[in-house]
Structure formats: structure tokens, C-alpha cells
Length: 379
Image 1: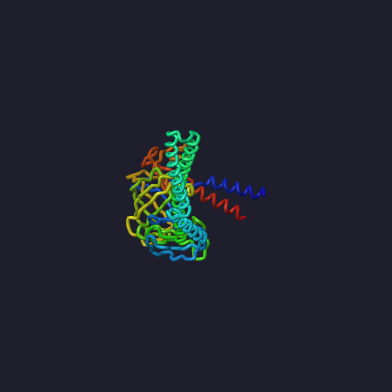
Image 2: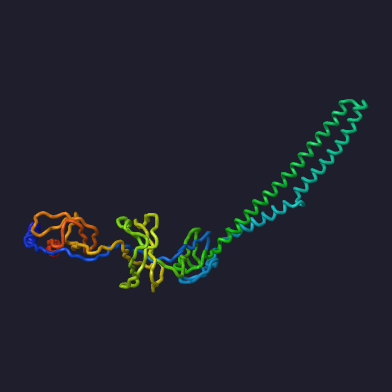
């Protein structure tokens, strides 16, 4: 083991002594600064067709790629509970509706009580008047009159109670009719949920369920969107979202059509942060027809965020991660001010000029180091 370590140290020492310095001057170029964003195709007005009740799918009458119309029945769910509830609610409503009619038994009985108590009150009123006249003529005692008067007051109270009871029964019957009518309508609506219809016209882009599948309320059965308008939905990281603006030009390439670039425009920047992708979401519309219109197709885009004319550029390998460069003839590295950094180039604003000669051993050192270590590991 010691021998192997010494061999490795010897190789590294030889490599450090034999480093080759590469030299390069900055160059002036007109450059376009872009922000990379990956994403996918999405149809306009995309929505998910979901199950509104539980049960088995007895019918699924669509396929991916089908054009559909608003209100078209796309699937049917077998849910007996909704059917039974609707039938029960309908029968209860009919009973409640019949109880509001004047011929309803409870209302007829209450009405008869009103009529009987009314007749009794009228009779007692006549009797009270007769006894009052007799009392005035001193033909009867005051006690006899008071008994008759008490009977009249009692029958009058009974009449008013019977009348109030009749009115209460009418009101209760109407309330039950209203409640059961609402229950009937709700259950009819719930029963209608067994038939899944299209919210709007469009195209079926994805199909998730087939006939015979068991679905629960909220399960997605299909994805539907516009058949004509399709756009790109892309993710931009936090470091670059501030550079992206509405109306900026973008270049897009579909994974299904490599080396074919489409022109687009940033049409929308969504106002919330996407926790799932840890990025911000933007919408890019195509400025020209695209040949491949399949939703969820993966793509890459470059959004043009700035243009720099006659920019001073140096290769990325000539600057370290702290922003320092090595100028030929100087022992200490020089700090430079940069604007943007790409995989290949860095725009420099301050610290060097066109005639500055930069040196680096990064490429040669990396190549030598990789060769030495690879050789050592291969032994």
C-alpha cells in the first residue's frame, strides 16, 4: 500500500512541475443572454374529467384523440345507492305534496275541528246573550249567568285554538313539501352524476379509465383541452425568474423533434411558486404552427432576456468560481466584475480589457489529473 501511495504522489508532483499554461485574450461579440427552461406541451383550457360518484364504469364512450362536444355523455357509473335515494325522495315528495291539498286527511280533520268549535262558540254566544237579558230583568241569578258566560269564553278559546292548529298544520305541510321537493331535486342531481358529461368541447388528450374500472368520487377519468390551441408550460428557477418578462422572445425544441426550433413568446407568468418542481411557471405561445400536437410532450426552451452588443467575453475556464482571473505576468489573481455566466462564456464588465492576456492551467491540469488518477485506480 505504501508503494502505491508513493507512486501516486510522485505522479502528481511530476504533473504539477510540467503544467502547461494556456493563453487567451478576451474577444468582442454581440451576444444574446437567454434563460433555459424545460417543460411540456399543454392544451388551452385543459381540465380533468373526474368521477362525481363511486361505482363501476359501465360505459366509457371515448378514446384518446377524440373530438368531443359540450354536454356529451362520456362515461356512465353504476351507482345503485343514488338511484334508490332518488326514488325514495320522489315518493316522499309526492306524499308531502298531497298533504298540502285541502283534501288531505290531517287538514280535513283540523278543518272539521274548526267548524265544530265555531258552531259551539256561536251557540254559546247566543245562550250568553239570552241569559244576559234575563239577568237584566232579574229573572235569573248572577251565578247562573256567570256559568253561561264561562261556557261561552271556553268555547271561544277552543275555536281560536282549533283555528290556530289548522293554520299550523297547513304551514307544516307546506314546509314538508318544500323540504322534500329540495331533497328530490338534490337526489336527482346526484343521480345525474352517474352520467359524466363534457364541460366544454375539445379533444381527449389522455384517458385513464376503461369500462369495468371501479372509480371513487374525484378520480380522474380523462384530460381534455382545446383541440386547436396548444402552448408550452415551462419551469424557470428562482435565480432567473426576475429576468423573465411578458412578451420576451423564446426558442423552443420538442423532444420528439430534435434539431427543429420553433419561435415563441412569453405569454404569461403564473403568480405562484410551484412547490412540486421548486420553480416558477411560465407559459410560452408558439408564433408558428407546430407539427407535433400531443399534450405532455417534453420540451426545452431558451427565453431571450437581454442582448449585449460588443460584449467583452472570456472562456468560462479562465475564471474561477470566486470571480478571479490570472493575468499573464502577474503573481496575484485579479478580481473582475461579470454580468452573465454561461457554460462556455463569461461577460466581463470591469477588471480587464481587450488587450489583456489571460492564462490558465485548468484544462491541462484537469486532463492530467484525470489521467493520473485513472491510471492509479486501474492498477
